Image 1 (spheres, one colour):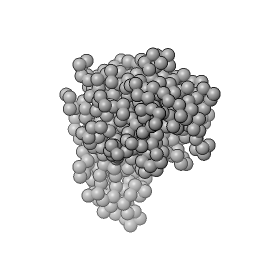
Image 2 (cartoon, rainbow, N blue to C red; image 1 turned 90 degrees about the vertical axis):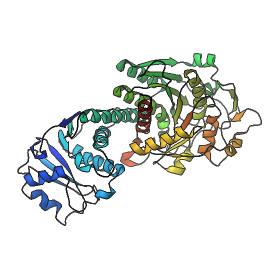
Image 3 (cartoon, one colour; image 1 turned 135 degrees about the vertical axis):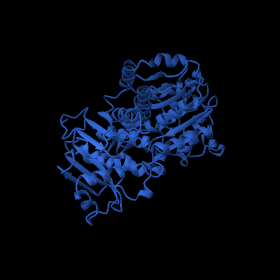
Image 4 (cartoon, rainbow, N blue to C red; image 1 turned 30 degrees about the vertical axis):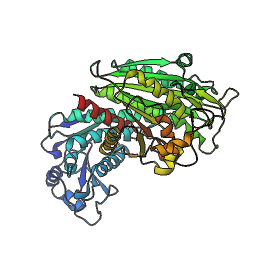
Length: 497
């Protein structure tokens, strides 16, 4: 999709297939749209001032065809609610809903009067970037394994008015984030017989081929054994698919700048192993690699942005399957750190991959380490699909993640890692058990990971609720938390430069 910031002095003179215009609850228009109302000779004012619409929500829409006095073929009026109550979340919803309407019709070139939404604390830069991000994600369609791939309409060009310099560059930033989100969605949506650990490794290599700033190393099971990754290998023991620890280096800053390390759980299918899951909705366990997908999506976004920061992405890729070779409940394995782990439940496998990957991250002397994982059903029970769960050992790091989530609308909520919870992981036979009791499941999972993070500042994002949706036409991967991670890395880059 092409993005353009036009210098046209009047919106009525823009030869687009459609102009998208916000209408406030009181029937008022923004400054740009008022000039359009004048050009249309009262036709627009008659509609927005009528009693047929309240303009309280984006459900109120009216499409005008061939409006006299306007170079565009259509004008789409969309309700924006009250000016005083329009925040970032409401503005993003306005853009997303308008784009849905646009994408349902044949409108190759659409112009948005986004400057009329620049009220309260919402700046034009944020709106321009968000429009591009929403356009990319709204245009995404999963077609990889479908025979009917025809689309009714295509949006080829999106424009806004150039109210300041470099506004198009700002739109391209939003485009990069949107494409990173879509990359994560596509990987998550692929079936597990296609998106195997090998597929993830090949995808990482392809990413490196397309971006000179990215290098990739793929660590196989033989090397894992040499490194002492007993926990990681215990997960893949029951699968015929080879497991890999995929290491991506993005070098966007000086060589002596310490990197941020992102660690993604990549269980491409989670049967639960010997502690096998119930059959209902087990198909959704293809989404258990969405943490890995988020790392790959974020790496692609920062590479497109040429972000001046160094990042190491670790993708812990494996299947978790039952077989005669599979790890059994009660088995004890030795992690790369040297700590022994009693595996009381083989369905608590993600933390076993992550603990060895976190230990491996020590060699990079990272400033921060963030792991991303669809880790616990308890996170879904507590927060549904709305929040990423965050825990960690460094409060300033978590505060920054919480603020970044607020700013980019990919929100997180913090849970405690108090020492009182650690005792649930006590084992009579090993240094630590891989599960706690029935209560505080998300927290005890974080407590387990914390045992392997003493040497760096660390945060854990449990995305079990936010990474995918389960119901109806919306079923599929969300691409979260690519936007949050990209926003965070942007703040790191800004702070250092």
